[in-house]
Amino acid sequence: MTTRQAVVARGLIMRTAERLYATHGFAAVSIRQIGEAAGQRNKSAVQYHFSGRDDLIKAILAEHAEAIERHRLALTAPDGEPGDRIHRFVLPRIEHHIDLGTPSWYGRFLAQVTVEPALREYAVQAHLNTPSLRGLRLDHGAAATRHRDMTRQLIVHMSAELEMELAREQPPPEMAAAAWRRLGADLVTAIGALQRA
Amino acid sequence: MTTRQAVVARGLIMRTAERLYATHGFAAVSIRQIGEAAGQRNKSAVQYHFSGRDDLIKAILAEHAEAIERHRLALTAPDGEPGDRIHRFVLPRIEHHIDLGTPSWYGRFLAQVTVEPALREYAVQAHLNTPSLRGLRLDHGAAATRHRDMTRQLIVHMSAELEMELAREQPPPEMAAAAWRRLGADLVTAIGALQRA
Image (cartoon, rainbow over all chains, first blue to last red; front, side, top):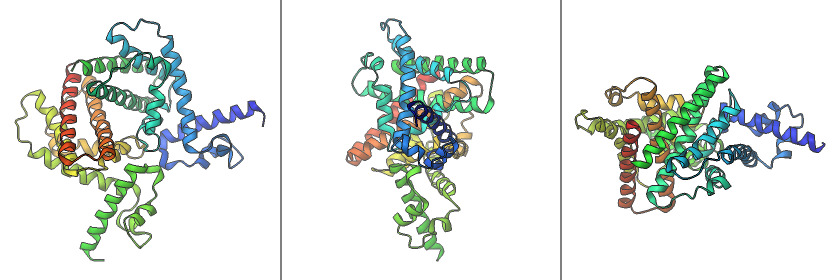
């Protein structure tokens, strides 16, 4: 297998896994089914490219985290007002979902990862421990931690719900983008209200 | 098997399943492992008492929903002010978690159910379609629906996180109860702030 073929196969396996996990759940999808659905003739193709399920899931997460990070770094607004921090936290994920188009699977995939005992700590770290978020200089203390936890839960699970709704209704791209932007605005409002409360 | 023995075995299987699912995730726990861990000698004991995984999970959910419903019916405060509705929505779940003690597994179990493709619709309905909540006469419209979705996500996932933290730290019962009441108060404040925003 050439390097190029390996890269293509890896990407195909990742996208197939994400779609199957999002629509059927981790419990209902085997590594072998992923290989078959990704058109890999070799029964151990997934194991060849990834050491196992968790490694495969982490690779999918990392790819999305990088794309979100690129959006966040492109937000050049100064980090002055408190509201700016919320925008910088929320909007890059919204823009990433718009890029993904409809149907997408990342939202539902991520929601499952965050409640999966073996993976949740990793998922939280992978999304918080990026250069752009370290730059936000997060506050410490019980109130700040609770606010941050609520913020994270709202973004992850509200995104998963909207994604599912859009996948079901298949609206034209501009309507889907508008629905994502509306969720983004609602999340910014909600997170701001939580912070003041 | 007498009726009494069957009831005992059913309860034992349900509690074992909940614990294993909460700590290892749906994907890592088989029906057979649940039977073994519940001390059932017959290899098809779980299938004998429940038709399958989803039926077992629904039975566990129903038992908790009933206990929460009892707490909610016991809250006799008049449903006059808007704040009362939020209390009636949140506090019965908090009281139920205090009843369960530490460690408990329901919070993490429920969080997994709500993102499991085959079960999430059922879970939402099972927790909303109770006499006490139908009595709350929920509002309609896009803003009310979004507020209700955010409320549900915050309650489910913040409870799962606190449960995990308590299971890890094993504080004395009165400290665990205080932590649950603090989360309840924070959720009431947060949900009130979301509603006004």
